[in-house]
Amino acid sequence: DAKTTQPTSMDCAEGRAANLPCNHSTISGNEYVYWYRQIHSQGPQYIIHGLKNNETNEMASLIITEDRKSSTLILPHATLRDTAVYYCIVRLGYTGKLIFGQGTTLQVKP
Amino acid sequence: GAGVSQTPSNKVTEKGKYVELRCDPISGHTALYWYRQSLGQGPEFLIYFQGTGAADDSGLPNDRFFAVRPEGSVSTLKIQRTERGDSAVYLCASSRKVAGSYNEQFFGPGTRLTVL
Image (cartoon, rainbow over all chains, first blue to last red; front, side):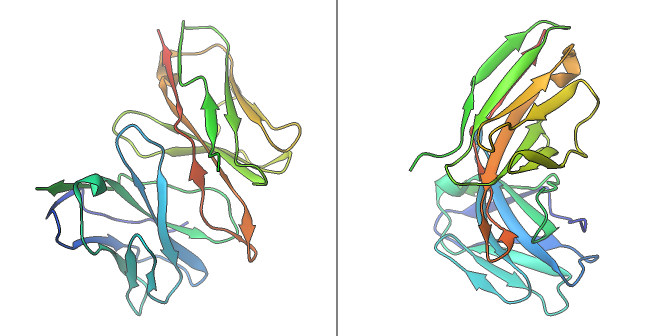
């Protein structure tokens, strides 16, 4: 599975959009980009995933660049409850394991 | 509906003892995963079951660690001769196949293991 690079930490004002970047320059053509988050003392929670098209669901939007070497997770209106560690993961769709990196600690401030 | 449950929520044991950690996946989920998370780190993959068989056990750190899923539902992670370095939160997740892929993994709350 390809390696990902994320900033260690980010701040965001409550009510504003949070844009979390991820670099995955060695991604291969059949690998998906997944985002999970982990709120303190809880298990990770799935957010969204995509292959090459942009994706949107009730939680977030995922923007993948045309060359697929990077992506951005967008939380459109961040709330205090969105404070968490966000993990960007690249993996083959049919394989089981997730390889977590260090993630980005997002702090949403009032 | 019920999510993934793990028991116990906390386990304190002494160095050298044997422990078992249990995971109840979401009903109908054929895939089950074990991860462990040390303080300040992301979760680390241990083993993945497809039904009753271990499809990938490449993350098990050594032969003190073993996991079973005899009926394709509940799984038990077993650690022999525990060491202080085994202290971590052990996470279990389950998923089901959708259109040929296992997309979303649903995680349990974890078991916090402390080895004194």
